[in-house]
Image (cartoon, rainbow over all chains, first blue to last red; front, side, top):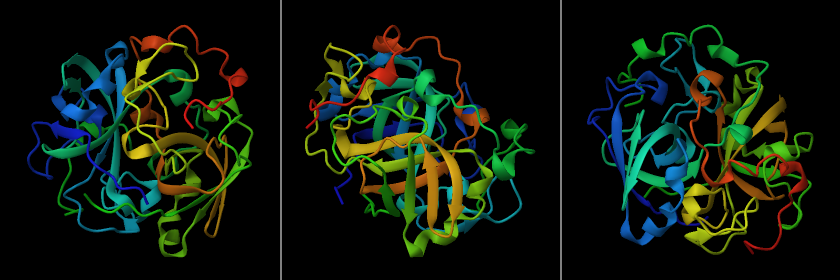
Length: 158
Length: 158
């Protein structure tokens, strides 16, 4: 496999894996900064034209891989690929965040849900025509997703 | 950085990087199979409850990283992070595909836009409440995204 190298680092208010928002939509107003390493800064051209972006990052504090997990939004055991658990093979996370501004190598975003110091792997534009899908079923979490703002992370994945 | 290892391999009708759909929505009916390696199969539990899934994969045939690219949908030069170009740092691709069925270690999907033999890195459930966002601007491609079914890949990223 190709080697994976961070393109930057995520700065956020979160320094503890416990009591974090479990998704960007749990804390849409929380600001963070994506600090892009100098060698990749040219790639930020045109990014400020988009209001929302995907960020890919490494769950760098996750040390295990569990194929069966109990998600934050559920109390039943689920296959890891049907969840957003950090303790997954390859430990890659995806969040969709709101872009506030780009200044030189710093991208300010809202809705950050990653730990301070998280290695950033990629940024891609969010485009509704590609990324919105009409779903017919949403599995185990169909019925218990309304109150995600009240759910914080705990120590189950530590 | 943590080592990245494929969890499986993508089977698709595409054997040439030219003349491929440029996004899943360019070819929503095209079927493919995700073959999950035996050691990760347990993680597929509950996945069939979801109609749409994210797949993360390696653009394994991309050998360059270009910070400035000319996207398939445009003729101007753009920063790579404002595009979906495969020639990006870390060469990780994301597609949202429709889940047709899960049988043992084979996940059949529709809307595949990856090359046959592509290393699969992860699967995550697509959940509208997390993944739909109301955008206020969509950058350089605001005005030229309507005809993506007519756009095929060419040799610009080879």
